[in-house]
Every structure is written in C-alpha cells, then in structure tokens.
Amino acid sequence: AAGVIQSPRHLIKEKRETATLKCYPIPRHDTVYWYQQGPGQDPQFLISFYEKMQSDKGSIPDRFSAQQFSDYHSELNMSSLELGDSALYFCASSLGGQGNYGYTFGSGTRLTVV
Amino acid sequence: QKEVEQDPGPLSVPEGAIVSLNCTYSNSAFQYFMWYRQYSRKGPELLMYTYSSGNKEDGRFTAQVDKSSKYISLFIRDSQPSDSATYLCAMTFYNQGGKLIFGQGTELSVKP
Image 1: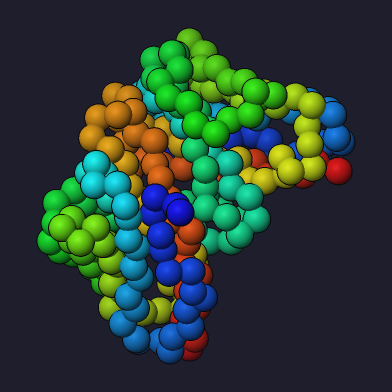
Image 2: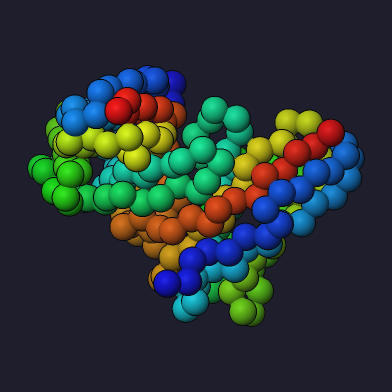
C-alpha cells in the first residue's frame, strides 16, 4: 500500500538559509500534519491542514510557513534557519480532518543546520 | 509539567519476557489513545489505538486504558529482539483536528 512520501530524506543547510520540505500524503487522504522531533525528544506538533486550509497550529516558529496544495501535497518552508532547527521533520496524513484512530507517518526529513 | 508523562526507560529485558510500558496524562479531555513504535531514524509506526477504558488485544500486544486514573499501558507478550525500539504513547481529543500529544518515549531493548 502507498505510504506517506517525504522529500528530501536528508538536508544540510547553513545558518540563515532557507529549506523546503515536501510531503505527499496517502492517496485520497485530505489531511496533513507536520511534526518536529529533536534528538531524543518526542514529536512536537507544528501545523495541520484539512482540505487545503490550515486546521490547527502548534509550536511552529514564525520563521516557518506551510501550505497544502490542490493535489493535497504539503510543503513546509523554513527560513532564517538556526542551529536549533536541526531535527527530524515528519509528515503524516489522514482522512476527514481527524486523527482519532491515529495516522500514518512518513519516514521523515532529517534537517541538519550547520 | 508535560500533559503526557511516560516512563523514559531505557528498558532492557530478555527475549520472551512480558514488557509493560506506561503513560499518565493530566487532561481528562483526551479521548483517543495510541501507541506508536519508532525504530531509530524512522517514522513512528502506529501499533494500536483505543478510545474506551479497558483492554484491547492485537496479537502479542495489549493496550489498556484507565480513564478514571488517567493511565494507559501497553503490554508486549513473548517479547522478541525485533521489538527493540522506542515506544511512544500518544493521545488526542475528540473531533478537534487530530493533533497528537506524545509522551517522551520509552526505549526498549530485548536481548536474545
């Protein structure tokens, strides 16, 4: 079965640079979630989209923005990168704007800021 | 204090042992409870979900929820070396968009 696809798998950026992470949800899924997981930390919710509209917002820095496109894929844009942004970024998808029964995560993008 | 607290471990058990993983939570509005397994540098993998107090069994795994005590557990029977991973509890609210609140994760090592 098709899973959540994230690209790139690894990304190395310098401080103050910009990064764009992409997420392709499971086919027919209309809801996307973004999480950030620092080393040895639990995943922290950043933002979610349902039917191309932002549905919830967590601890996402103002330097980050995201959107969901007409084909339901989503992009997380990160500007003025800081060393503390180095983390695993996961995307997940579900159907119907809810996650009551859990949802499927992608394999993540490992961002390293140097 | 975090909304969801999980025994951090690490936990090391011999193959075949019964493993008990536990989380407590403070917000009684949580209605749905999940357990995820995460291998190193991989995405979390959904193991089980439940929404009512009581036990739910799936193969070697049993999820237990006690809403009155705000306590959830995951039991793994006949543990295998392939079960070695970090286990994360997660929970969410009813029909509020699906944001998951995770525990800190318990690192489990099953020794052959």
